[in-house]
Image (cartoon, rainbow, N blue to C red):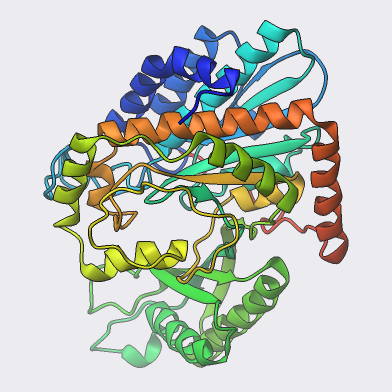
Length: 470
């Protein structure tokens, strides 16, 4: 790595404080709009660094925005800090060892994500001040990416209306500019209302809501053959109607998670799933009501921004892991399957290398990848403003995310190094945008071309509010 960008120095100056921030958030894992300790840590850091702070962003108590600069272009840097349920795990141990039975854990690395994003915003703020440059950097501290779609609500409420471009990143097993591939999705709760009865004495008098849920799931299973190949429908029982099998269940709820390649295909697929629910209600003589729980859009790519970020990434080079990092990564790899390790290489379009424990390269911008797609509420930001993301290696090659193995590596020195690296990439990309108005205009032209082809329609209806917790 050659230190050719002065904004990297601003990242280095703050590295220890932000590693501490990441570790503090790791130690108090919180989920789905309950990230009160985590947002307090981010507020503390925003105050310490002199940002103007907006709390309760879009009416969400665990969403926070910090801004520096008085006028000029607005560059947004997106952070997250939510964890996942049932993934409690002791850090630094290559074996499954929960700290708390049924506890939460940072199985997607969002403790690192938020800390690096705020570090990048701080570096940009310091660089602007040092050089007397008129521009604004804005940090968005976002909760509930895992299933709660907080950024979708922020977009819907207009919090990105004056932003010129947005930058983010995500912890990964490799280092690359993120390919803008993700699935749009909506989570919908289908609640069936029937009639209770004695299941043995007078079952003919009952109308089973649980039967309706099961018939709906059967119908969705048959639908799968007739969906686009990259569409997905998953489900979870939210209310199975109670624990008494001798009572005909009068109420039951299933949450259907419907995914599709883009918003247009998502809308069509949702309509088909709703028809199946109506059919299940008809067959069981029950009544069905629906409630949208959350929704996110697919990512829109922006080649101008992606090329700019790739230039900064190539200049910085791979994450500087050392022998101790590699040794721990090899320990972790002993807990993975061969398929999990091969999957990492397929996703980055690279031939598998059994001897590689940590990513020691920067992937090219254009590459052939294989593997399924997930979803993210960054997608909705990418429909609101030109957006670019990095993937930066923070853990062993083959690490399956949303597992205890990710949590085990969340406070490791390798994770901290990847986090600092990500902050440098984002800060350097922000600097390029601020210094090059033509780049911003090119990014915005590309963005408008996307919207002309397919206008944005928020996947969450206006009357649906975030599922906040007290």
